[in-house]
Image 1 (cartoon, rainbow, N blue to C red):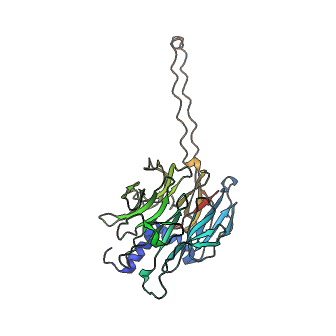
Image 2 (tube, rainbow, N blue to C red):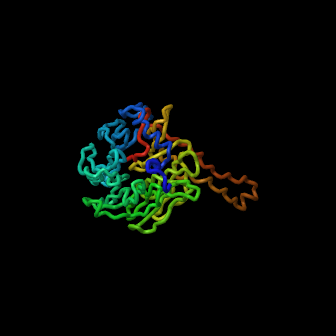
Image 3 (cartoon, helix red, strand yellow):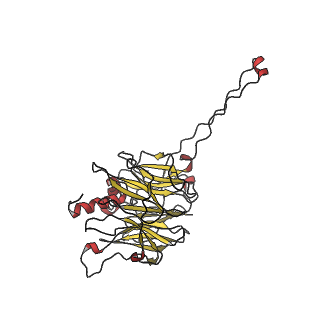
Length: 377
């Protein structure tokens, strides 16, 4: 990418920030480009068992909506709002507000009221250099609510080299008081999607490029600023969008695995490494997994219908719960039974597992697949 025009590099960076490739980037913005999706009002008809508990926050066309009790409510007006996340105590929201040449992180009430602006990334109005502006994405609070983590495009080497790094800011501090946590690979789009961990440190997404020029993402774990850290997934798995289960023992992610289509994958997480992967969904363009607060299932976005707009889907826990135990072993016949010619009892067969399929929750809505889902009880 070195030496390519600035416009080309900027387009690549924009596509990389989606984390799931060109198709999801284009489909996620159909609402803005085609104006065909309906504003969310209520969920599509579904069995009562799939009335999702708690309240979800999603983005569509630059606006945030909440979904609770089967009814959508407007949280913010359209105006560049995206990537909601909850404070650990679920008392308020973090969200990104995009402008034409910069973005900022805000803290919002659950009703969408602005409580505070946490970044100030617009350059001086007297400075026409776009390099004076900055971008913040994927804001997350640490579990103790003392640090704001985000993906931030500093320091810029050139106007068109916008490789984001993960930064941590003490609450109430400016970016000048913040600390850079990661060192991104040049000309890749950088490091995005921080996931702070209860025990300290964080998981994040790092983009890289192989010798053939192919770009892919890996999940990395780091425990302190600018440490080398360690890769949790491989380049070939091409994983992003990590989401930790409420009990902290499972990690959901979106992986491509050299395929044309993304997959919803989960793996056990012990705080330092991932266990065996398990593919839950492989026949949809999946994005933005979010665990329900009670651990009853995983919500995600995937296209449906002829328009290819991204809808909300629900995968109950039965789809990824541990399989039932196998058949009991054959009892060993006693000597007296063998002498009398009594038949050996047959082992008891385990019941066949009932397939659990994803349930489509919305129709004709068109959520932004580049935006996370926030969910509280």
